[in-house]
Image (cartoon, rainbow, N blue to C red):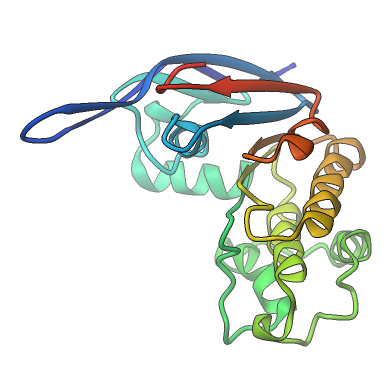
Length: 219
């Protein structure tokens, strides 16, 4: 089953003096349960593509479909709700709220959505990620690798069909990077999720089912 589809995606930024083609006609298809790595040099369009696929930004032209649903045909609030219920996003900077405990950070998106919290799934995820004994701690008391695991747990608990990760190991040492990459690999197998990872680390990319390379806004 095709889970993610992008057709002729373009994203142009126009200034007074020049036009930047951040994406210049990108098309791709990702199957359910696939682990896809996106690599390329800085400025090649990797993060812009991920933002389009996650509904965080809108393309200049072209379209994105998630589970057969067209993001461009949704209004702002509708797209936000769809994204919250279908797409998990893990950022390089973790984006944890410092005054909330690990548990509160993980369940926050579900509480914002007024959804029930699956405590059994939460326990399973926390054990898999090795953070089951960190639930009452604040983010600042955790290492970078542990904070990234909390961010992954937050994304997984909503049971997203698609998990998008933007340089999730960029702030970690090599050992922690491979551990996090291995956990993302496990997500595709245990939860049958479709995972797309933007990375500059070749060893992380090699864990994927497929690798695509971007250059100058194109695949």
